[in-house]
Length: 198
Image (tube, rainbow, N blue to C red; front, side):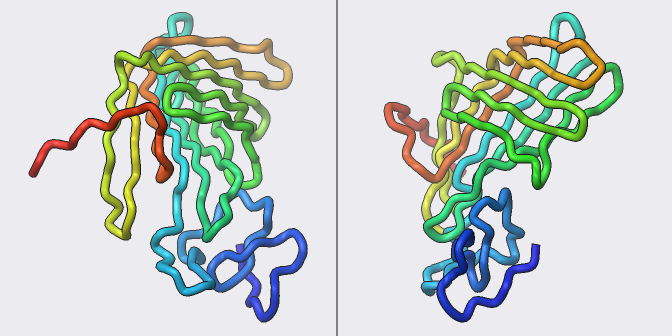
């Protein structure tokens, strides 16, 4: 996406994004355009919320697998809508999920994810639940400043429904899902574990 040079205040329907303009409904922003027009360190901008999901061993379709990344980008004081990118493999045929311009509906928390992800010719609805006894939470230092808190659940329950024109709705579930939620914001009520030294 080309960003217009900014001489005065941003036009209606846009937000400041580095040294240019970002449409208010933009789903993502190329990294080279991230910056801070007020002179703060542009490295503090970037992914603000990230969800990652891998699921396999679906009982009725054991060869199926799902790989999905969801992200919101922080640009100055603004946050982009969620963006989803991934794939679902069924009997060797892969369905690409999300992508720029296909905005998902996402409710992401450290212990739960609910998402509706559009794709070309399909729509995936999914629900992920992480048992409180399984996840591990750690805090990483961001090389550019600040910290990132990440919670990883290796045994998450995943339920999904795939809708495709001309096909019956396909529903699958598994308890072999890995769900990771990361954010630069605090996670109330969750105590991170220390990382090993070295």
